[in-house]
Length: 379
Image 1 (cartoon, helix red, strand yellow):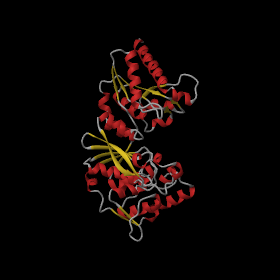
Image 2: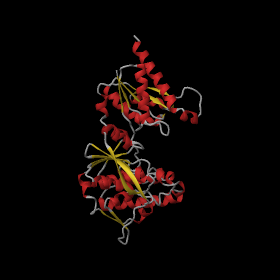
Image 3: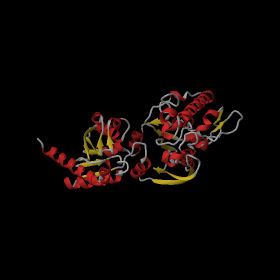
Image 4: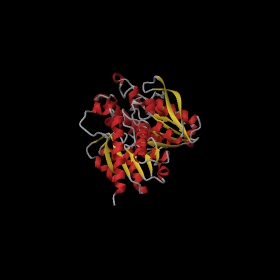
């Protein structure tokens, strides 16, 4: 009997590594002598770098960069297989880096995310996977591209810094100084939204408020984003609003596609490919996945659906151990996960559930493996 454990973390309570340990202990109790394999999994959001380097035996590189408000800071990215790097833009340009009282997409920049990309290219890495969730920015990716040598110019030919406030000032774009390694790089962007760059469903109006934008600021940013998109169309011949996902990370998705010729791809699919998940499935009898809360959204780009679909394609059963179930959780059954087992087994509030997370998960794992053992005895 071979079990493969591939669960997302339970945010704020259990890491993927803790879950692997709990499942391994339980499997060995109920099925002595079984073979277990555990891999940390993330869906292209927080924890993606750690998950990928853990499985690929890679390492972290920590470098000095500038944060969302151009403050000096440090950020890390992962490297593996000699030529590959995995980057989380939020490590340098993420919303948690900005104190709540200073959150304003008018002032923030993706410059630090661009510095991470530049550092990876300088170090010789040519296969880059970039996770772009969790940004504090709405600069259209100008800051990141400026860090890579692109110049955005105002009506007087002066170079702009690349914040949200600069969007409406763009009149020209000079790409002659872009990092030369961009032409040699194969860049994948982990993106699970289809929002265009502008419009009611675009970067500004969809994500700007959570980054500190007031209605007045959002209106100005949207006007600026339209100006920016117009200059891109005029100077580079690309209609960015026809790119699904261009609005991700405050427009960084658009910049990565236009200037770096990146390919937008599902976050979980990218992670599963990077860790050769299909190879790990060979010889596996059952896969256990999961996340902190499973609901209808879990079927769209989350760890359980990504893992479940890979299992379904190989004819391998998958089950999910989860912290809780929300509305529409059963939709995951269409995506290869055949059973859901919540860790909560009685009435309790969220504080108690979180404080007892490890105990509750261990109990749920035992219940699940015991039920599997019963199933194996059925005729």
